[in-house]
Length: 247
Ligand SMILES: NC(=O)c1ccc[n+]([C@@H]2O[C@H](COP(=O)([O-])OP(=O)(O)OC[C@H]3O[C@@H](n4cnc5c(N)ncnc54)[C@H](O)[C@@H]3O)[C@@H](O)[C@H]2O)c1
Image (cartoon, rainbow, N blue to C red; front, side, top):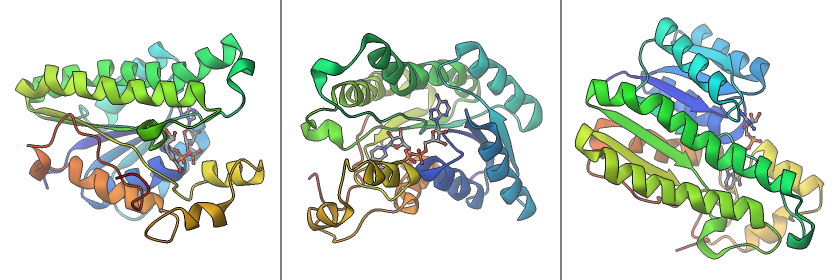
């Protein structure tokens, strides 16, 4: 695989952290973007300590100007980005009739508009290079819907749609755009749901044909392939990584 510069949003924790580590192990220089700047920097420091190339940048994906400033910093310190992984996300659950306008806006601002704004900031660099890879981390909840997750499933379903549009529009520049809708991955987000009583891990394992929770590394392995040269004929796809929960 040719080394590239990769940007991973939500890179300070869970799936984004594992993806950043995997892309670095693949030989890429990685910029970890997270609204929690300390976790982004810690992720990068571990990679540089191991001899890799990485930076951590505090970026809140709801801040469009902040995204552009972050990409400028990446260009200066690592080079122009050619891989973008959008993993920053917010999950909320609760009765639909109790979803406030502010909460609806916030979930869409992070999950959907944040993804869109990061794509808009990075795609010009990919066009200039004649090569690009975008992987959007959506959600397996979009396959069949989940009661009481209106804002989340709506925003993530829109990410799937956005993925297809961008794939069609930018294929001619050598850019592929795919989504991974993960299902039941053992991350701090999932453990937070467990502690709030929103899910039972044991019940979820029973529902999962492969008989275990997924790991962030399961998602990172699929992402690594989609970000590689070899995946150039795969675009506009939703590549489910969910232990067989959705087929
Ligand atoms: N864990 C699962 O089972 C699962 C299932 C389906 C989808 N997903 C999706 O995977 C992605 C990663 O989730 P995770 O489980 O690794 O969660 P996580 O909570 O471990 O990590 C999410 C990261 O995103 C960052 N973040 C949140 N809002 C941000 C913002 N506005 N700007 C920048 N960074 C922000 C957080 O600080 C955190 O570091 C999310 O988009 C989530 O919706 C996860």
